[in-house]
Image (cartoon, rainbow, N blue to C red; front, side, top):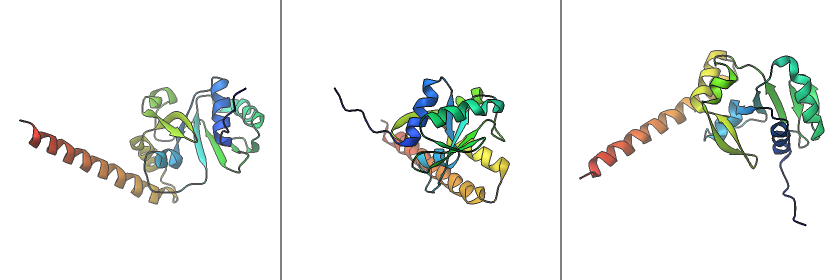
Length: 162
């Protein structure tokens, strides 16, 4: 008998959502950090592709993997990580259209869809909560650096072509 891999408590929740065919994507600062933004965050934000009124279905799944329910849209994983279930994101389109603006990236030992930085930035700029203001600066800075690096790489390639 093979050994079963030990999954992070949040990864167990993600697997349980997948097993129930509930589509989701990582958003917010966790998604920005996975993409290289130098910041910290305590919580995990998951955009759930269900109507908000079905929050009890998501809570039930979360409880089945050991999460403690704190509110209709918030649970705590076994390690204490707060997980926020988001059903609508301000400043962005519908889940299906925004899923096109995601990319599969590693998070807690799983490959999951992660909303791209440009879209995270758009949402944060729309909401403009006080806590988002430094995040907006850090996301803009990383995007600016990436753009400059891409321009430099393109310029270098053009010079080296015969």
